[in-house]
Every structure is written in structure tokens, then in C-alpha cells.
Amino acid sequence: MDYYKIVRRGDDGRLWPAHGGTGEWVPDVDRVVSGDLTACRNAIHFCAVDELVYWASVGTEVWEFSPVVGKAHADENKHYAAGGRITRCVGRVTDATFHPIQAFYNAAVCQARDARNVAARRVHDAAVCQARDARNVAARSQDEKASDANIRRAWETCDDATRQCQKDYEAAVRRAGEEYGLALVRQLTENEFYKR
Image (cartoon, rainbow, N blue to C red; front, side, top):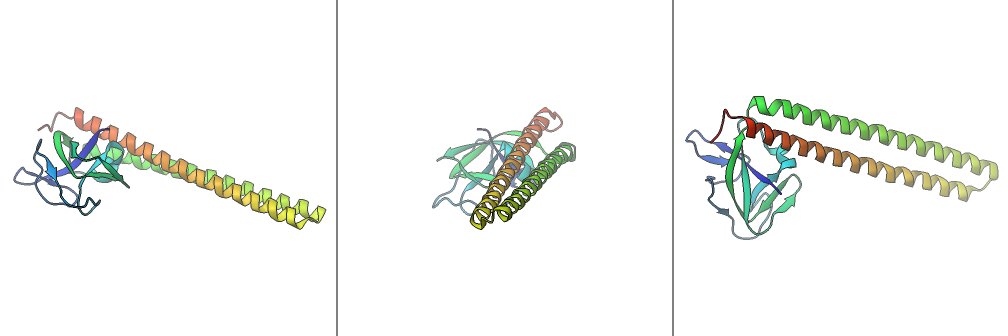
């Protein structure tokens, strides 16, 4: 898996963490933490390509990253390890590289959210119809226990389908994030204006 570190270049030309943390980043020099490894407290943080959407912003630099101590751990929208190093500058994020790709990502997420909402509404409407039909059948047969069981089954099916809609939405957002990250890396790699 390819990993990346987001840094910010100071006025002095040195590289510093873009999102918290301390200490200068020097290419091909290991950074290591000691003690208990804890995300957001005591770890070296970096991201996979699909997580760049959360961390890259205008003015930051994207560097290839290599974990060097222990294994990489995943934590929500980032990874962390006990040590690592930046190895090669992919490029500097500018307005020209960031905004079109961010707009694409936002549109993809909106499309996925809309698809989830439509699917969830259809599932809900189908469950309402099934519950109503079960109630009507029970009223004709005067079998209240069967009606309750059928209504319960209709709503359980609705809940299961709603959970699946949410999983599909989350998968679509992950895919959009990966496409965003790949597009950003490709754009930065092709941008000859800023190479270090």
C-alpha cells in the first residue's frame, strides 16, 4: 500500500507537520516515537491514498511516506505507526490542483448520499406496504399474532435494507476518496511547476 505524509514548508524552507505534531521532517531521515503508541497522542501519522481528501489542502505538500518501525495501524481517516520517513515530494497542493478535484469528490459524495436516500425511502415505503398488507390480511382472518409477526418481519427487513443502504453509501464515499487521492497524486506528479 502507498502512504503519504502531508507537511507544510515554513518560510525557512524546512518541512513541518501540517496538522499538529512537532518536529521538522527531513527527507530520508527516520522519525520515531517512544512509549505506548496512541493515535492522535503518541504516533507518527500518515494517510493512504483514499484518506488524502481529509488532509491535503492548499499550501501543503504531499510526500511519499514509508513506515519504518512496527506495522501501520488504521484509525478512522488516517494511519499511524511508531516511526516513519518521508521519501519523495509528490508535489505542492495549489488552488489549481485542489479545487477541481475537491469539487469532483464533493459531487461524488452528494451523488452517493442521494442514491442512499432514494434507496432508503423505497425500502421504507415497501415496508409500510408490507405492514399494511399484513394488517389487512390479519383483519380478514382475525389472526392477530400472525399479523404482528408479519408486521415485525416487514420492519426487520426494512431495517436490514436500510443498514445495507448505509454500507453502500460508505463504500461509495471510500471509492470517491480513493479516486480523489489518485487524481490528486496524478495531478501533483504531472505538475512540473513545483518539484523539489
